[in-house]
Image (cartoon, rainbow, N blue to C red; front, top):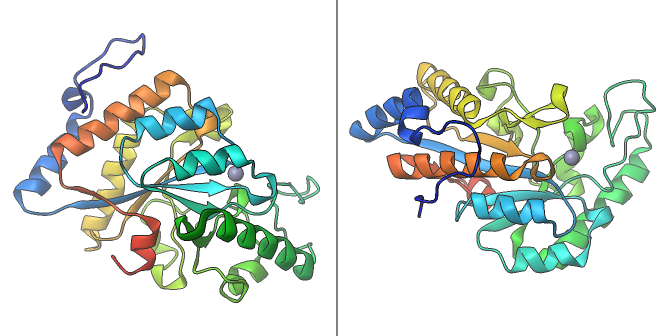
Length: 268
Ligand SMILES: [Zn+2]
């Protein structure tokens, strides 16, 4: 399933050569009967697009969680998701509007907003996603720009969410805890100093290796490593590169991809 060559114009190496340090680590782990656990989140879905379809193809059959913007939801996305295997839905705020007033980092949920208004918008969004996607929807709140007020972080459970998905530094156990019901991503594949350009699969591999080394050091290998994409900024060549990377992980083995539902149900 992984034989199609990438279309990119740069000199191409065999994936096993290109990702050699990571492959060596995975080989060692496999020989020792160990494994690496991962999960994948893609942000900013609200309609069916060429870019989203391309990403869903590139991930092959690996489970992926789409952070969907409920206030912008278009029925074309509903059809696409219902026709796709192993695709789940998380709630990406309400309308992905920046309410920061330019005073700080962008945020849909800054401290300055009325808690009543925020609660009502989130409830509308959650109910819409539940009604539209049924069991494919997991009640996990993904705050746009990874920005969330203290009040919301402390009260998301009362608003009907089982978890929040934010961004955390590599090896989040050092700063946040799974017990706080955060399902965070650690590897953002976009460089936001370059309009979200793809960091490249070799850099993804480097960060993955680093994240796993930290887990080994702290004896927490089972703690899953979250990867984040933004399909809208991925070019065809980026998707090819990601697809090759995924294939390499699949062929080398010892990677277990988790669904959000599985993590919520306690697969950890
Ligand atoms: Zn977003």
